[in-house]
Length: 122
Image (cartoon, rainbow, N blue to C red; front, side, top):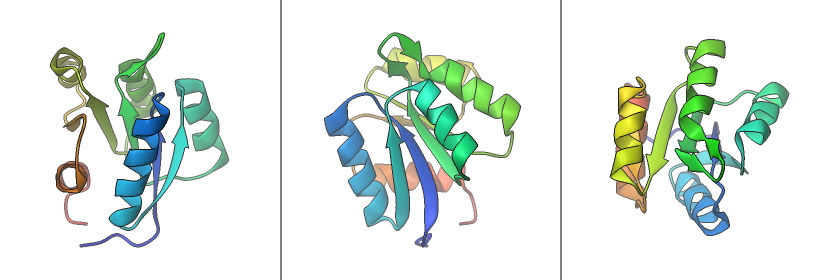
């Protein structure tokens, strides 16, 4: 099922991957906002409501797992998907209690599968 107009926050510091992620999200009916850092993500969340967050695990000097853990404490019902091209980073996200992960690079089908796991019944 295609969620029309649902809002997704993508936290990705690589501009090409950020654009690709936003295009794939849009192809699935999502309205995507892209930011490059955890602090920008927190600012965006303070300014507006999102239905889901997808965050890279490695964000330069910053840590996406720490961001996701903070989000879970603040907004426990907000689904968070962690993405990384490094299997060790994905394992670290799983160990931190973030059960939905997405290996980069990903395609439309992989994104839809992650969305289905994060938002069952949509």
